[in-house]
Image (tube, rainbow over all chains, first blue to last red; front, side):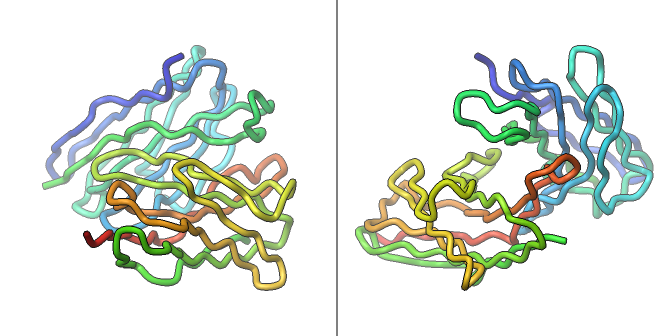
Amino acid sequence: DAGVTQSPTHLIKTRGQQVTLRCSPKSGHDTVSWYQQALGQGPQFIFQYYEEEERQRGNFPDRFSGHQFPNYSSELNVNALLLGDSALYLCASSSPTSVGGALPYEQYFGPGTRLTVT
Amino acid sequence: AQSVTQLGSHVSVSEGALVLLRCNYSSSVPPYLFWYVQYPNQGLQLLLKYTSAATLVKGINGFEAEFKKSETSFHLTKPSAHMSDAAEYFCAVRGSGWGAQKLVFGQGTRLTINP
């Protein structure tokens, strides 16, 4: 059973560019959340997608947008990159049902994508 | 609104000594609480979770945590530290209803194990 996968592993971009990060959820999961983890900080919630719609959003500007596809995979897009966008971007998937001792909406994290903006 | 505060950004213990990582939470609703571990250049791995079933929660790798409502705390402990425990540890809180699934994380505590 594959867990949450993310691509690419690492990415280097220049200020002002746009970037797209990808996430495939754990098998059986239909909800995807994205988090930003700046160096030396805890992860911060960006947004959550369910049924191909953004359901919740954290305190991030509109430069951060996303998409969820019919197969539940998701993309995170960041426009007009700033130096401060350099971070580890984590994807987490979950299910509204409780399976195998997991809580409803218990989040399973992928390995992350390290984005460096120069 | 929910939040967590981790006391101590760095904790250093000797191999074989007790590990204690502190977490205090704030929540307007009964919380779910979590401890995650992050090894260098990796994602987050769930150590244990509190779901109101029991106040003392046992997790993986010999870690456990006790939920104390009166102190709004959920401290993580391990009786005997091992070199492989060196990592970053995050406490997190979330609610239980629809619209409350986002995790709110603390700043993290870096655990160093001295030989």
